[in-house]
Length: 436
Image 1: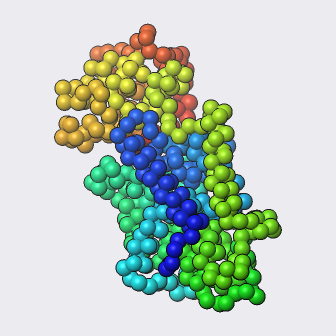
Image 2: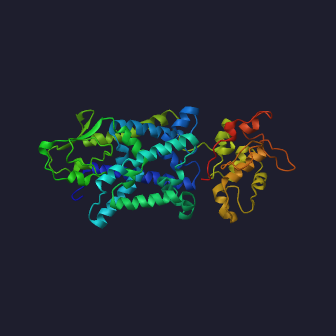
Image 3: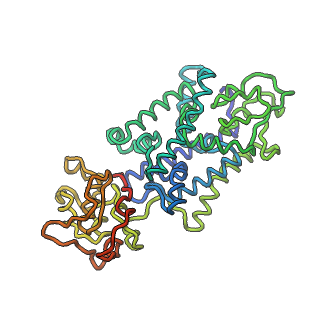
């Protein structure tokens, strides 16, 4: 697009850049520091993925926190009022695709399009992806899409390509292919694959926000069609009611007539572009502000110590980002015994080491689940392991009795349960966090 960038489009690019930098920074810090939200927790789609489990049992899918549900509320309200505004103004993955799309236009000096018949068919694929992910997640209670999610792969790049490839190889391939395709076909992932885009497209069917064309002043220059990143045929439409519209308003700002040929309408009334932008960002932020003010907003999991204090601590709560000292202290276990049961040399692995960083120090592969199994055996609670391939009945360490937490440690459910209590099926089959 030639010419000076309009104020509203400059604002949109600043908004997209802000959220891209923000989420990238959070993802980087999550790999380095404690109690920083995981990438899963700051993606609104996680709220939709955990919705069934939340309604059915009052629990959240692992890696998803209550703050993610607040993001989902933002998305729903935003989708109803301003269609796919999130996609056009906030989505970090959309921003990445926009960057590569701009790069592609500079390199190839032209715009490529998918043949219309093929494009129409491919646009439905994202709805299939949406249904498949929700069905799989709601029936298994786990984030089944995680290994294939390009956003999760991107968020773990700071951990190193080798680690990303080992755990998110398919997601990384999808990320690379999506960005390269965006150089040829703008926002290819948004158009054909993104499940959150599909969800927003469904919400966009509520006709509150629309871009309308005044045919009497239209000069049929097709600049609006060329500017649309979603390849919508704006020039021939009286009203842009396509579910593919991401409310970017590129078509409105590029129109050369200056006679109001393309206008934005909200609930049937003409509304200024700046007001649409301000309203959209405010709607997205409002539920987060409410959550913060009420003290219920949280994007990071409670620390082991916090959960021990509340009496809700479980073996499954041990994360790859937990340190050896934190695990021992929270469960009231002697540190040397934890090392011994996990088969780890404490001389090679200091107590302040994160579990996920232990392997490189020992020169072997090591998973946080090994520590979960060790803790379960020491305190005498059932734990099947992440893959369900460990005994579900506690086994005491030979020659020792199960160790009770130290008096200084807050009682955990396992330590306070009566010896005769029968473990519930839920406790035996709880979904463990991966070593991340």
